[in-house]
Image (cartoon, rainbow, N blue to C red; front, top):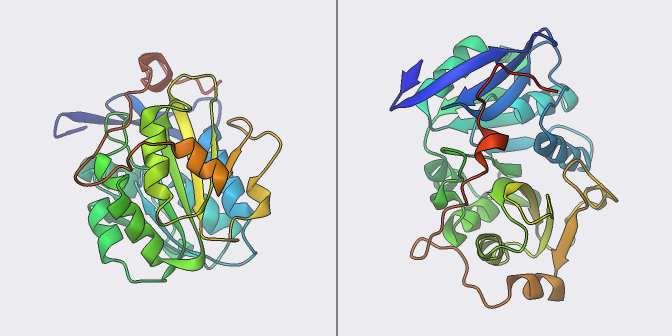
Length: 272
């Protein structure tokens, strides 16, 4: 199954009936359990889910920029019935395969849409969402147009005052790319939490961003699936950013390429 030179594959998990690994050009995109949507295979998705779980109880209005297999959306639908969710995927063939082979229940409140994520951020109405999730990758790297101060400003605009932005990116701790991304976030958002591998290598890093006094206490944990969270606000945020300029339309920067061995599947899938 190929589109624009990329191969989209679904690998069945022999050890977990209903479990599927979604690949794009052999890069892991999503793990979906059709029998149990509350099962989360990837540690970074566990962090995203734990953050959502820290919000007040009840249904949520959510947009996911970067659809993949809609794993987090399925989890929210299962744990917060009545939620309304838009899942945006820009890769046409991947979107088609998820829609046809990993379908969501019509009653789930999930709308799977093939569209450009940056355009959707620009078009959604003000103050209409509780959560914006940016989890988009092309070749294992985050599209640059989703990490600019302009895009992140749109994310803040469409969020309600108590809303959260959740981002999954590839970055190394303290890297110039990460500091420029945080600088872009620090314009529209004033409270951030970073959670990722702090050993200096490139890996998944989850960023939670909120307006003043709206960061849920539950996201500050002693030790999460990706390590100990790093809260940034006020002086600590300014110190982390330093003198770097924020990512912008006029001065973009792509995320670093992730390590081949940890992201690309070369053999039969083994989730252990």
